[in-house]
Amino acid sequence: MTHPFRRAAIVGVALLPLAASAFIVESSRQRTGPHLFDEVLSLVSDRFVDTVSNQALYEKAARGLVRELQDPYAALYSPKELQDFTRTTGGRYGGLGMLVEDQEGSVVVSKVYPHTPAEVAGVHEGDRIVGVDQQSTRGLKLVQVTDMLKGTPGTAVKVSFSRPGVTSALDLTFTRAVIHIPAVPFAMMFDGKVGYIPLQQFNETSADEVEDAVRRLTHDGARGLVIDLRGNGGGIVDQAIAISNLFLKNGQQIASVRARAGDTQVYVAKGDPVAPTVPLVVLTDGYTASASEIVAGALQDHDRALLLGTTSFGKGLVQSLFPLDGGWALKLTTAKWYTPSGRSIQKERKFIDGRLIDEPDSTESDSARRARPTFKSDAGRVVYGGGGITPDILVRPDTLDSVEQDFVKAVTPKSQEFYVTLYTYAFELKGGVQPDFTVSPAWRDEFYRRLSAAGVSVDRGLYDRASSEVDRLLGDRVARLAFGDSTAKRRELDDDIQLERAIDIIRKGQTQADLLATAAPSR
Image 1 (cartoon, rainbow, N blue to C red):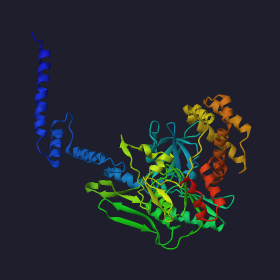
Image 2: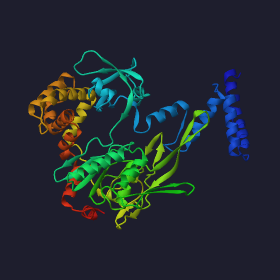
Image 3: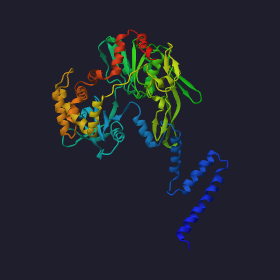
Image 4: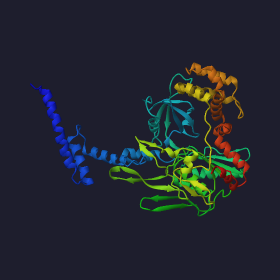
């Protein structure tokens, strides 16, 4: 006798080949794209195990279409998402005026900007944000917390802080304001009359801030300028055009945009440059992107600046925002940026699991560089294509030695306690130091004692052997709190070999041609 369950199983299996063959016959018919979509939509609507409304089905289909383009910058925005997107893009927004960072799962204030609600309320660097509008931040990602802090200017938000040395939470109520974060937080002169301009973003006033810095430094006798684009991920493209215009001659091409249909839009310099001859060095790294690459590429192609550092990110795509019915919008890549010599800024990458993956040849090795397509600058110098802007002189940043790496590994499991202790101690020290202070052994001993009390366990022998890294961390934090970013930057020059090399090149050269000549052996 055949067991009834076994018979049922056999029947079920026997039916599968028939169903499969029927499906194959059906799919072999000539089908158009619209018919295929309609069939799939109908089957999902009628047969899917869970009920999905037609509106939701169409939305999922639209989002799937955008996702399958493999364009990491394309996005379909719902009305609410569009509101958030437009609120958080650009250089101004309704916020509190503090920079926050993720430290091992805690959102910590790393900088308070002057003349902002955060400064007025007395927020300190090192304060931890533990709640926003009665909601705990525990388990929230950094972007979730920052979205809660931002909002319409004039609206109120209540933020709870945990401060080292204070037992209870600090509850502060802020009125959001339009925040302007400086594109050039400071500009300074190094010995030898070398001006330094860190350009950190491209907002509405970037060109004006750079121009002001150039005029002031050259008025004070700067014989050359270093424009630091390291870590600058871009921003408003018009500002990149305007900044390039400060240094290029009237009529010189700055960049071009080429769309799929072959339409090309060319941007050229207009008027007289502010600094037509002052020697320039531009610093770039792997985080230099977008608008920053437009500036770097234009100045390099016209032999107007020597580029030093590492190859930039390679983000040279143009996104257009198309309004749709019902308040929706589609952000879509529609064109690419090119430098004056014809190099595409965009570096081709694979898009896997929502992440951009560099191709293997993206390394900084000499062989990889030689494999790149070559172009010519105005003076006939070789400049490299293949995505991103390759510097004229490759200088990699300094890395920690093995002892310093061991020290960092030792404190990493307690990095939150480490940085809170560092901030707290630096606050206590800042009132009694002069700009040329040195980190004393007594400071180092006291810092170790406080780390141990905070549960940060580090072998004392390792701590002493890594004293140079401990001194750097302590000295940098105290200097920033006591005297600001420019003093801290001056102190850290010995640890910034890229900037140090740029300053040395300007000291030894009289003209831009002299600077460019230093790159000849490496090309």
